[in-house]
Structures are given as structure tokens and as C-alpha cells.
Image (cartoon, rainbow, N blue to C red; front, side, top):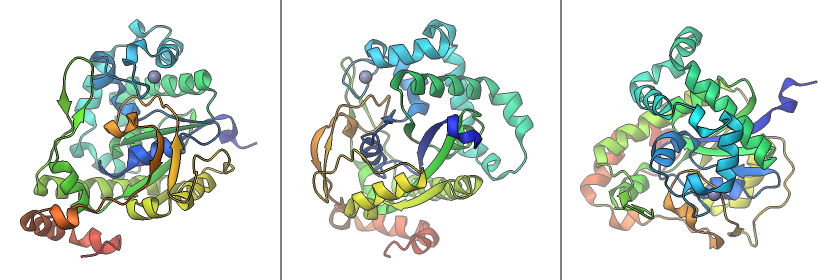
Length: 312
Ligand SMILES: [Zn+2]
């Protein structure tokens, strides 16, 4: 019997932010037996310490589902050193450690530096599985280094979805001031100038390609445009990838979904929008991104624009 049969399946969406991962995560989370956990890697820092909102609208420390998950995982949240989890994440989840993703043999580094982080994620994913009865957990964390750490977890059956959006669309989105809602204080999503956005888009996508190679045939490359224009096909392709039947889909038409409340730990504020949602391609950048930033982004990302068949 395949060892993976008893493990919970985890779909990790990788790439560079503002690529539509929250919407894709929410839609995948509607499949039968599936749980959308949002950007699970962020649960330690932004979420638990600041007690920010779960996707259900409740502060996470008061959300009964996450309370059950965290209690089950660690036998009480007080038993986990959250500060240590945050400092490990801040220290290692950075571009300078991406070369490890390209290495074929660095178990020693991982064991010596990140064993605490990895073993606590094993406990967390097991508890999510046990509390939600999920067969599939969807994690839209996107960071390739975090994705690489997930490959070290012994108790999950991992799949990567590399979601690619036109860097000029992301550049335009990254210039907007987007509020992260919270009861107590207002914070904004990170903004980036065109150069930083382009360099990170290149880095994240190259690292995501490498990450996918680590899982052989257990990965899928999805373009944002294909996903928005043909969401049913994308949904079906991902279900095929993870070998799950296409049941209980949220589609009420070819381009409309009906989404229930989710318990995403973190992500784009879109995670709070439920009900009937019509998928619509966002190409505002074509009209509104200024000429200079469009040129900078196009030039800096040219090789991958060509590789991914994104129009120049
Ligand atoms: Zn919740």
C-alpha cells in the first residue's frame, strides 16, 4: 500500500503575491473534504501574536476552529514557543536562503537549524486534518522557502501549484494601498516599487520552478489568466493532480462561484468576501500602469515573460 494513502494531501500555492492565490485557495477549499487554511506560514507572526482576524471574521484566538486546532496540535497554545517560530521564519524564509531549494543534499542544514519549525508544522497539519476531517488542506503561503520546508514534513502528501500572473498586473496591484481589516488597528498590505516587484517576481518564480522539480509529477503550473478565464478547467486539473474526484464544486456557471465562509489564517482581504463571486480578469494595469513602470517591469522580467508566453 502506498505510504501516502494515510497522509493528508496538502496543496501549496507558490509564486509571487497578488497572483490570485486567495481566490484560487477559496475555490479549492470548497471541494468536498477540502479545507482552505489561507497563508498558513503567517499564522505565527502576524496572526497569533496580533490576534488578527480569521477568514470567518473572528479574531483568531477566539475562532473555535483554530482554538481546537492549536490545542490539539500543541496540547495548549502556551506549549509552543511562538517567538521562536517567528524568529526562525524571519531569519530563514528569505531570498538569501533560496539556494537551499536548489541543493540536492542539505538535510544537515535543515535538521540543525529548522527542526523545531518543521516538527511544529507536522503537528499543525496533523491537527488541521484531525479537527476538520479534511482529506485536503489548501495553503496559499506562496513563499518558495516555506514550500521547500513543507517538502521535509513526513506526514503530508504534498503538491505544488505554481500560479503565475503577469508582473505588470502585479506591479500595478502592488502600488495600491490595500487595507488589511482588523478590529483594533489598520495596517496596509506591502507595497513595492516597479524594480523591487520585478526582481522579486523573477526570484519567486525561478525558485518556484525549482521547487516544483523536487516533487516530480506532483505539481502544476497555472497561469492567472487561464485560471480566471477557465476556472472550472483549472479546478478540474488540480483535482486530477491530487487524484481526487470533482465533486461539490462551487461553480454556479462557467465564471461564477458561490463561496461559503472560510477559516483562512491570513491572506489578501478578499478572503473575507463570500457568497456569489463572478471571476473577472483584472487587466487594469494595461490602461493605468504608468509608462515608466511598464517599461521597467517589461525589461527586467523579459526572459520569463517570454518563457511563460506573457505578451510583451
Ligand atoms: Zn475562523
